[in-house]
Structures are given as structure tokens and as C-alpha cells.
Length: 486
Image (cartoon, rainbow, N blue to C red; front, side, top):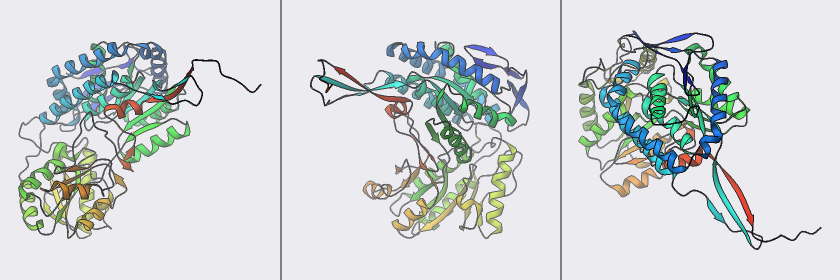
């Protein structure tokens, strides 16, 4: 039976003003899984009005009462893990392990946000005037526009709203049209059932053809004070341009062209397992996925043989099958885009070591290439699919240069049995995140998560998340009368 959902505005399930709806498709079967309201600019205005009206009361909620809602939401989310897995499988092609990982991390994001609510914030400042007290205080900004992507829908849906709400802001969320339930309405249901007041979180779903218009209307609304976007670098650049036009700050977590570096002192078998996870978890549809596996030349032959054998054996196909590792991409068009990158590379001289070939619907085979050069589209493009390149290097300097030879700068993994060696290399990698003796895919809710260069700016996680979604104000208190020159 097809699920039907309306917009969430002011705590009420509300049809789109136009009465239009949009189909939410199962990427593996192509069948309609759900029908959601297709919101437009008029609905955005209604949602922003509800958030704006709810802001003063939400900002005034005591920290301990606000924290209780977040802790309740975390427990509720964990209790609904089976529901989340069902939604993610039908809506985004997610396997059960990936869905349960989403729930576990998202619940901890809520708990970390709860802890940050009552953590000390602000500073007492020295003052120029005698008898004066200076304070630097953190205060909520107002209405935040949140854009949540489909690829890790529960994690990123929760992350798009947790820090803004914890800081005392209200939110209008535009979830991805590819997963409006998992990254939007499901998350909102959990928070609503946990006691979040009406209007504090509003959700506007939309049809794919209306995405740009809805996003622009949301960012342009003068009552929106900040923008929070996670998604591709191309769309992020558009969002950032709109935000800058209206002089609104933004936090952008965008794409990556991430490397896993296997140093000469690595354990090869461990490196093979780490690299396979980095590249093929969620079919490579993670911003942190390893696109490039850089292997020291002394280990390259052994690593490549073992890695390609492991990749060739990865089960692909139906996400409902518990054995499936590489499930469908989000749409058949996404699989065809990945296949085009592989074809271009092969036509220009790259070698297919595993996989390759045409996709079946939304399923692209797990693929490993070698001999990818700068004239090939895959050299710079984020694959965002189950594809990686293996390349040798001779020295640390060469590995570092290869890892940094991208406009992106999100994350990197360095596999080594020598922590000192790994740390020396890590300090020279130009990314927001580096993991020594681990691969590139990792997220912890208490850590500062984010990239540099074209991977975005701003940070999520811990106190950094609350700082990103609050304003610093300077307040002084004079304990005695000042003296003026006239």
C-alpha cells in the first residue's frame, strides 16, 4: 500500500497549497513507494511564518527542558530502527546494516546535541572601564533553512536539524525529493512525538522539478537567518550564492574526492578490508567514500590482487537480501552516470581490474580501475558510486601530492602500522578530516565534522555545531557610573 504524506507546518499535517503531489520511487523496483505533498513557494512562506512565530517561545525554553526532548527523541529513534530500515530500503535502496548504522549514529547525534545544550558557553571578558563586566554570549539566530540529502538519510536528516534546534533556533527543512520520508518526515515525526513544540520544526517536501524554486524561496525569505546545506558541490555552490546574495551565513557540507593511502608499513590484509569498506559501503554513495586508493609500490602487487578478488566477490543487487553489500544507486540515472565515467576512462586507456560493464537498472557493479590519468573525467569527478581507482606511489611526498591533487578537501584515510609515520603524513593532507590507520568513512557526533576547499565550510558536531548555529554577542555591565567628557 502506497504511503501518503502531507507537509508539516506549525505542527499540523498540511496539503500543499496547490494540491499537487509527487511520487517517491523505490530505486530497485521502480515502483511508487510513497506520495508526498509537492510544496511550492506559498508553502515555504507558510512554513517560515510558523517557524518565526514559534521562535521566541522555543528560544526561551529552559536548557534542561530542551535537553529532555532531545534525549527522549534519541530513545524513540532507536526504538523505531526497524521502521527506519524499511523506509530506507524502499526509498533509498539502503541495506539493513546501513540503515541500522544510520539510526545508531543519528540517536547519538541527538544525545550529543542534548549534552551541548547544557554545556558551558560564552566567556567573561576583561573590560577597559573600571568596574565593568564584559560578556561574550551565544544566542540563537532565528529561523534556519535546512536542506537534508538522501544518501545517509536518517543521519543527515537528524544532523540538519539537531544543532540548530539545540541552539534555540527554529527550522524549516527541505528534505531531498529522493528520500522525503527518511531524511525529513520520519525525523520530524520522532521529534514531534518526543515533545518538540508545534512550529519549531517544519517540513516542506517538493516535486523534483520544483526543487530550485522551493530552495530559492526558502533562502530568500527575510525571516530566515541562516542556511544549512548538505549535498553535492554543484548544488552547494548555487545555495551558497543565494545565501550570499541575501547576506546570510551558511554551513555547507559538500562532496569529496577522498583518498585512502596505504603506506609501506601497512598490514596488507587490513588495508584491503579497510579500503573495500571505504569504497563500497552504501554503494559508494557517501561523501566520505574512498574514490582513490593510493598504495606504496612495494605493496601494490599484493594489495591489488587481494583487493580486486575481494571486490569481485561482493554480493550486489536487492537491498532486501541480507547478504547484499552493493545495493542500488538512488536512481537509474545515477547508475548510468557512473557507468559513463567508467566508459570514458576505459576509452582513454584505463584498465578494468574488477567489475565494469553496464548497470542493471539502478545497480552498478562494484568496479576497480587502474591507469586513470588526468585527461579522464573520473580523475577529478566524484564518482558517488561503487567505483574506485588504484594507483601506486613511490614516496610519501608523491602520495601526499596525489591525495591533495583535487579541488575537494573532505577526508582521507592513512593505513599504517606506525602511528608516528601516519601522523607525519596526515599533517600534510589538505582535508578537514584525516584518519590514521583507518579508512576515510567515519563520523562521530562529538567531533568537528566538515571539509575545506570545494568540500564546503563550517563544522557539525559537539560544541562546534552549536557555535555554527548561534550568534556571538558582546554584552557589558557597568557596576558604577561612567565619566563622560561632556
